[in-house]
Image (tube, rainbow, N blue to C red; front, side, top):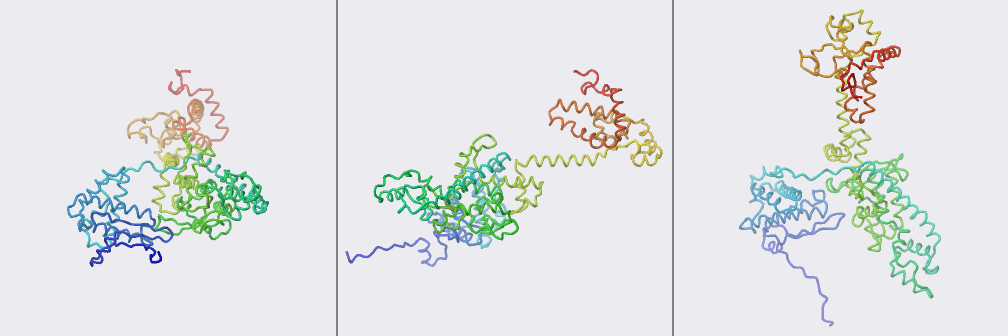
Length: 619
């Protein structure tokens, strides 16, 4: 036995090592891609049929995964590896000498056939399009690095992705309705208040009242919390073993209550979920960036504000960004992060080294240890239990399912409403094009955009109509100066005198030219009904027309009571508003009182058509 040696790990040469020994300049088919702050990932294409093609693609993936390049995560590496396998499977089934096939032999028709093959074999068009896009990215990387290695005819084909239009990816992610967002916020605030009471107020008092269980006994609640505070989580088996070591001690009264015991001093996943969800709803921070926040993410606090330092991996790999937010109480973003640091203080003292710097850290009941960070904290799973606890419902009355992307959309939509659609302010953290396409053009903001268009059209109409209202004093002055009247009314002097004398009166107004209506053809009579006179640039309102205007206003008020609000606003809202804001304020109160007396005496509404309430109408 003494002559036996300890076995050693055997290293077998991969195919690329054998080829390298033969003097060929080729890239490996299997290697690991390292990342500065993440575990490395394996690229393995040793089972490829098109060996030379696979080596070119593998080398391209390794080049794209260097620090600062396109690929910045293990998941993205594996996505490109899957695309490389698809290219290998496609060409292996259609070429004769698959082992010697290279990217230099690929033609534009081959790419078109590959596109068709993807859409036929992938489960959804979206998956096929995504893989086609990544395949084009690999080939473009080869083109940029070694343009002479590709078929010259392929260069033009690489300028666009595919022949088919981009498949529809379904409805855009919409923001939560205001009532749902407010209910979620209130539930988060309520849970945070309970967590502060449990983990700060009560836990501090219990730990201070406890003592070492070895001397004070394991059956006392405060002593157990003291032990957890000093030594970290304890399993049920360890607790039972400590109990049995003490003479005369029976089963632990806390047996089977491990979660309740640890939740008294360590935060749970639901505690962190309430802080995490409220932070995104308060800042609009990207969910993946908020998940990777560290304990030192708060920078440069000054005058009630602080900067949150975060990493946005979708932007050039690992670019560090900062967001300036309010700082103060628990209702501010800075206060939420400080509160998270306070509630996780005890758990952080007993965390593993890789989790100590993560902001989100908690006691994991399944692992029975302290865990946290982006690798272990799953806010969406924790939010499921959180929504069940508070019975949160969505806009359809169903159980609320928290989609993290909708939280960011909710913040952006609320910010967009508050700033009244200021797109430059919305484009924080991305370009104006992305802000307009992904955050402004969503169903939740459609009523706001439609209202803006309606207001713009109404404003344009107000500017175009220029209704002429002539008070009595100005009317008397114009009767004395025909030239000034013609200039102000923009008519010929003879027509100006006729307008002021009432020879061109209609029912609601005087008309500058009945046969030159903006609603009809020049030379023909005005085609619109009489109530459109108040929206016409030809109309002239004098004190003579006030009785009819007041009588029509009374009629509109009756219609307003009988019609639905939306229908009335669409049919008569603008006319009523014009009478109240443009016509009546131009006349003094004595003139209005006299006009109302005339309207009540002469009953001008009797001349209205039956459908509008005149003689012969149905009561």
